[in-house]
Image (cartoon, rainbow, N blue to C red; front, side, top):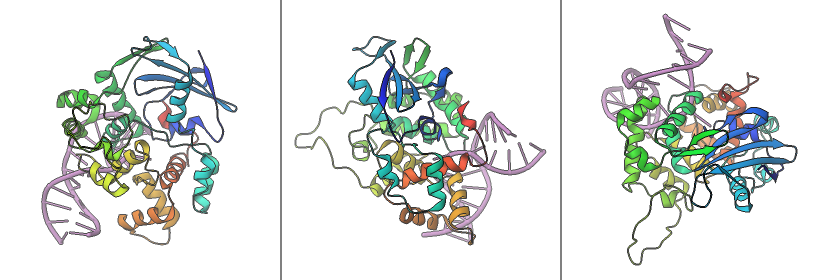
Length: 322
DNA sequence: AGCCAGGCTAAGA
DNA sequence: TCTTAGCATGGC
């Protein structure tokens, strides 16, 4: 059964294809099909609305049965960040000709709320890989280690849990086409699995990592205060294969740090061309400092507009939608 | 054929 | 503290 959500200031295609998530595919009749947590979703944009169908395997909902109720709508609205005001966010951007042009061209792009572990694992896998290949790796991991989800249009797989990856062998991960990143993903999963990272203070209220917390010592507060941005970054960078870029992606895409500004090769090229055309040999440190002072509290959203704009600049269509 | 990909890390200046 | 090779593999 298809349900509808009224939307404004939203564009589904750039949101799902700008490179922040790797699990969405185009299907027939303008549908996008993807996996969110342990559910399969079909999404389609129509004038003024987003249509959705949601399928899950759980105790309350039998496998393959469509969900459609208030909580399902809330689930989609939350994932797509439809509960925030895009004009207000764009209003914090600097008066910057290039950025404003990117915003006009891709109006409606939103930073979605991913699950932290899937986001982290995906970006550990992303080092010096093309987006097409990252999508392939994530798909391989899900098919080999995730839980199957049946739908009327095929079987999908949830992204594997921390334990599932932690229990895998190096060879199994290697076979998912991770290359030299396999040992990083394995070591990161094992470190998280034994409680080596303070997730609760990086992503307060997040659904990840999917581990029971076990007994808590008397007098221990159930919810620690959230880390500030720098501390959260430092905590994430304890993990092998996680440097500043990957950590920024995780903080922006899955932990609600809207100011995080990942600098990858595409963004770095764009920054040098747009803002430092007169200078050459601008140090990475100066680039970082510039992005922090120039783009404001929603720098990460600005980054997504610039990134997607850069990747589609001399191209009509995106090569990642295959 | 050769260069590049949503980088990270250890080693050397 | 700041640059530089090495890392695996596939797409173009």
